[in-house]
Image (cartoon, rainbow, N blue to C red; front, top):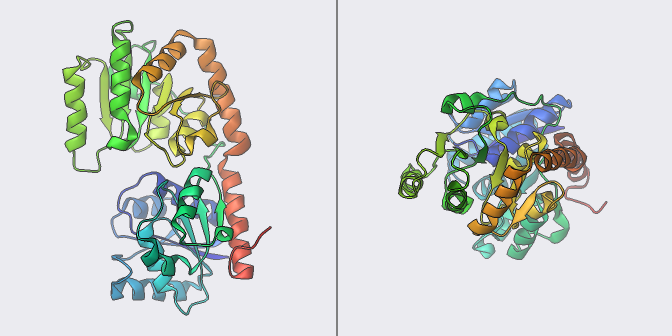
Length: 370
């Protein structure tokens, strides 16, 4: 098949990682893939480095004639059969740009909340042959919007590459000048309020007196310009945790850097799915995850990780201390987490299900019941 991926995103976070996985994976499976992205974006750099065909465009929005005509021209030149988009703005560009063209639109929804202003957005989404939800929780939010028929919505969880060699430890520890035996809790993600870093800091503060050697590694940047990151640093100073908490900012290969963690925490108030959770489990890190959104579909409490209530530093501290006290438990949860990913959330499984969906909409014009 001839497949195009379109993204107006400049930064490179979970949704862009997912797009890159699809583009590279389906290219390797023999499909003709082209990626339409913004010049200078994180996607342009990484997709080109992966050997994919990348066409930078000054993408703006669906009401911009230059955007629409530029997309139409490139889709026509490539003979595109499937156009896949991942954010609302990109859905609308795709819907308008493909009017009158033999191109099937497929979208992926990565957010939990229903789409706002559904009445205005429904005409755009009704042009989509299928919408993918990355979790059942995300599917529920999408269906609550009533912008697309339920039989055109399918849940395909994210996946991670289980064939990738496990990283070697000590990169971040060396940067922090820590003894290899120092216990380290890790967080990876954007520094925004909904990711729950303040809850994590409160939990670490509770543990600090009994575990003065404990360290917290915070890996991620502040997409809002730095104000929230500055707030977090003030909280660290005010709570006397300056020696305990290390901020590393954006790290190019966060999954590899996380080899230094003894426990990884995903403490979002509500996570749509949790690619970071999968990456941690694939690397055999025991995880403590908030029991909300799509995270409950990944982690089975006490089997391959621990679930805790959102915004509850006391419960989080209790689970962290239990793991810090019990190396055998950490190993067991880590091994079970790896097995869980291999069985249910592998990249190969995600690619196969997406490839099958493309074939179905290409043959029938829209998603058909299996």
